[in-house]
Length: 177
Image 1 (cartoon, one colour):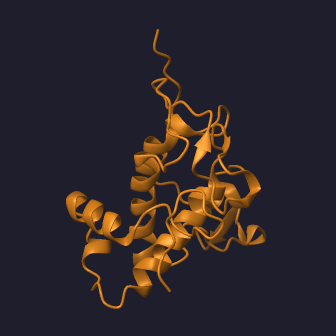
Image 2 (cartoon, rainbow, N blue to C red):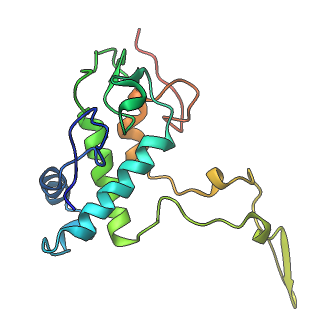
């Protein structure tokens, strides 16, 4: 089943076309993507769908959906400025979102479900002793979100489009005066 990439469509299922992702991954040397044969396209298309679903729901984006609830995906959006204060077109998917989709899709192609792992919080071990060896695991938030992998390059790409207080830019915030 071919991808639907029409911005704002009620049936859209990918932020990036297969051709755009092929070109981006080739230019970036992402062999998890480029080493997979182009025929059949189904595995790559499925990875693009999973990447898009992840990006559509993993962040709280600035602005509002251009076509409201009838729009299948989180982008395109209206009333959005990027991290440098530039207006983002309300009828297109920003290049940062397309690139982030390609990066996540490459990971998803190599390891399906990578961005949405099954997490059993009850299985976390605080302290374990085996004979004379004792290990205590680092603490941290005990939530499924805390266990989700973070691709720093994706976070860096999209941080200017993420609503304040949503974790975009994990290190800090810079303000241009």
